[in-house]
Length: 470
Image (cartoon, rainbow, N blue to C red; front, top):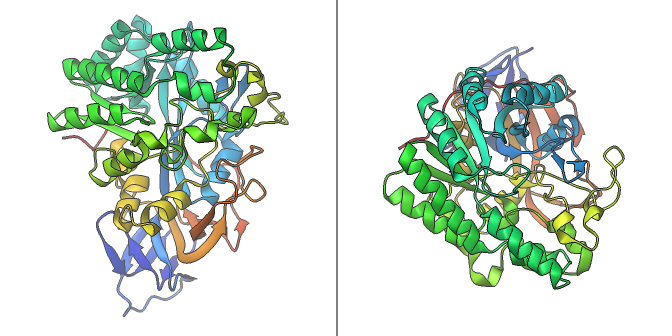
């Protein structure tokens, strides 16, 4: 691979903004050069007037996830290609262990799904859905394979749910190995009672999904998870935090000096309970935790948490299901006609994340440009053992780079997105800023509104333990 020079742009990292040219040799950055230099025999990529950013890292995706009788619409091929179009160059997806299955078998199954199909680099967390002696032993084996984070659910009884005893045992093992526990924190036992009662009252529309999954139950579960983490000493990462009650618990834990962290997602920053209205059309917006009531102040508190670093990361929980039949996986959101509890939970988001956060965060003055890079690339890399290979532009780092036009614009639409789903949650939104060129390990995979990559460009990342600890 010939040397490349990204010339004339402004390089932005989590801590710096500099007028510099980026020299790439093979798959790595080998120099950050001042304007007064002489480099010969290179392919020049003109970035004049552009921002040169680290490739985005989405540490919460669900490609091909089985859910409620169907599967998430995006495969590893379509989902990672869409991610690249949006300026994301690394994902960390979730391998799944179901009840009665070994965790190693689950990881190997997901490795097979991804192998040779990904447009960008990828790693895995492990959903541990069956905590027993064998699973605890396999957690250690998986950590040696670069799976250093394990997701548990306080929700979905009968599917992925773990009780407090199982959570305690898994946390003890993760703490021993230096791994991270990722927690879906909602009180699923209480929620199921509220769901049953709502359906008995004839409340079947999608909006009731948001109404019954009370924010106080996210706060309660977050508190409980934190206390178990405090007891065991494990690093705890709350996934897809949506509610101010949960954020309050995270803030209190961090004020105590605990290694407790959290992510939120664009849907919780930009959408609300109101989107779940309008009859069954609201099924587009069914995810868990649900979209929250904007008037209750959840959105503004989440933005505040991002500014104060009480929320460290914005990922997507990308788990798309079509409103109509999917060409491969069949009926999806329509499974919940007449019963909101049967709507597959999840929304598409891996492609628009970077644009949404730039427009809604930087352009609208909620966060700085450096903070934008920090929450979409640098901290994800540090939190999940990929830094400085990923998440920054520095000598020796992978040449995962996005050339971004801050003065460009684009409109989000199902007609132009590349995710394999038949709607956009942000249809018609006008975005300031546009991804112009994307490099993955030095290879240009997006430029001139064309995809130049291929399945198999992405490689598996064996991750280290978290570098983001107090």
